[in-house]
Length: 271
Image (cartoon, rainbow, N blue to C red):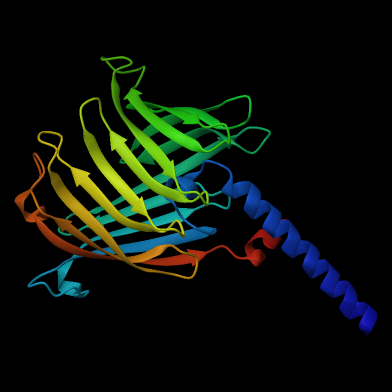
C-alpha cells in the first residue's frame, strides 16, 4: 500500500513540475495574457460596466451599459470575444491561429460580421516577438539587454495609403524588482495615456489625454484584485467628452470582472 501511494505521489509531483515549467515558459512569451497584463492562466473573464448615478458606486442592473466576455486558449491567446452594448446587438469575434515549430503564433485570423482579417507575427533571432502586421497597423517591438520589452511602436499598415506613417509608441518602464512601473503612450507631440503599477506589478491607475490639447479626459482607478493579482473592480471617470464621442459617455462608470482559470486537470486532459 505504501509503495502504491508513493508511486501515485511521485506521478503527481512530476505533473505539478511539468505544469510549473509550462507556466514559466508561457509567462515569457508575448501573448494575449501578457498583453493584457493578466496573471495566471486565465481561461475566460466576464466584464460588466455600470453607469454610476448620484455618486453611488454600486452595481445596479438597470445601469448596465456593456458586457464583455473574453475566452483564451491554453497558449494564452484570445479565442473568442463577445461584446454586448446597451440597446445594441451582440458583437462576436472569433480567432484561429497557426503556430511554428517552437509553438509561437505566426498567423492569427480574425472573423467578425462576415469579415475576415489576417495578422502576421514575426520573431527575432532570440525568439522574441519583433513585428506584427495587421490590415490597419504595423507594430514593432524593442527590448533591452535583459530581454525586457521597452518599446512597442505603431505605424500605418504597409497595405494602407499612407504607408509607413508613424503613430505612437508604448514605452515600458520597470521597477528595481523587475515589475512594471509605468506604460506611457506618446505620439510625436504629447503623451496620450499612462498606466501606473504598484510594487507587486498590479495596475493601479490609467490616465487618458486629449489628442488636441493634452488635457486629461479619462481616469481609471483600480480598487480590488483577486488572489492571482488581476483586478476585479475599477472606477472609470470620464471628466471630459472626447472628440466625436456621444454625450452620454460622459460621467462615471463602475466596472467589475469575474475570472475563470485553467487548472492542472485541463492540461492533463490535453495529453
